[in-house]
Length: 337
Image (tube, rainbow, N blue to C red; front, side):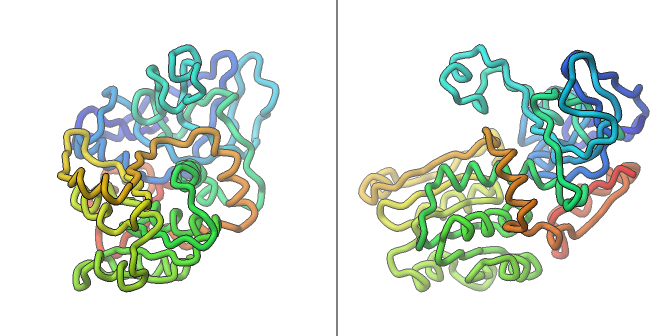
């Protein structure tokens, strides 16, 4: 089979590998679509640690090609997606119920082979049926949407809230929709790329800020004098993470959602945080949210059909990060057909 394998930062190769065989309790999935994630970009730039070499990619959907011994819930041809994270269920964090913080976490496309390949292996326990109403591309949004569901839950978005989202790429567009679905009355996106701002407005954002010519903090305070109830930083940008603190109202919540460089630091005034009684929250992974994400997609409550800006064949994967971040980009999708 063909696969996109990352050997080190900036070193991705398209190579032939043997088709994997499912073991006990495992499912072999023929990949049809795999989204490109901010984590993938951070792997490429060296900002996120990985176990090299590894097949990259973890936001995917496809069909069951084979099942291992003991698998009873899936059969050949079933349309599926999967939670890409394997946990040990034995460490202190797993025993606390925080499986996504597992000390022995092994994530697809990071620590074990992922889905930018013709075939990928997933445990049956991590595999989910997808309805015929969803295309493979739409179903490939399940994993990032599950992360967003978790982030909005952590932020405790309430009906009537004002929510700010810094960055309106694929994740920012999903955050805008899920925040609105949770009851936010005002959803403000700040994004330098005009096409992304427009798409966010089409998908339910109520206001859009162009930070290249507007003071985002001042604009947020103009829309709501005291600031936002919740601010999501969705780009993994250190400067935005610092500025998010000034956009939240007293008693508000700041969620650092984007994948920032592992060695990055910012300066935050602790007096201001204390005096304003701000909550600064990290949001990592997608615990117990995959089923809920699929329900949102299946019901049409969250729209993703208008988020894919570029499609690549697997053989053209090396072009992905040449295009990444361009003025006409939104979600990049690898079509493995």
